[in-house]
Length: 118
Length: 113
Image (tube, rainbow over all chains, first blue to last red; front, side, top):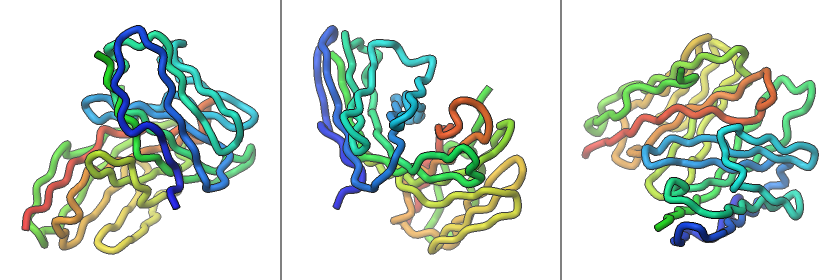
């Protein structure tokens, strides 16, 4: 069984369009994330979300918005796509950090969605 | 200023030639340091978590160690199937984004038979 899955694997679209990428995890995790990996392979956090809190990386344009219908899903909606949005987008999930937790929880990643904006 | 710096950017080894990858970090408080492996066209695959200086973890030919400023990923007698990009990431103890991973740019390892 796939732990973290994303659809589609590839997405080619034109500038100005609106698109969505879906993510599902079957690990029972409470927190989900979206990362962007640029052409230089640098992974950068975009959002983290659990049922209590959405944390947005301040550098992410507001054209990007996460939508979570339930704990197992975190979809990424992108409006008015631009050429610079071309990248690979990864979804990840982990257990939620407790307020007094002294430990850390590893994140498990999906296979990625390669977005190409033409 | 990068908070996580990995070196070298690329490393080419002969099969059986042991070596180490470095990850240095500058964060106000470390909750955890993670090593991932990423194959082309795939998502990062979790390898290790290290929490405190002096800690070591091993998995097959890989051994990860941690000091207060850096981590090493030692590869003993590598095989061609160890070829991949190895990513280091840290999770901060303080601040509003405690759960987020801050990644380095990775070390691309190639092992030739």
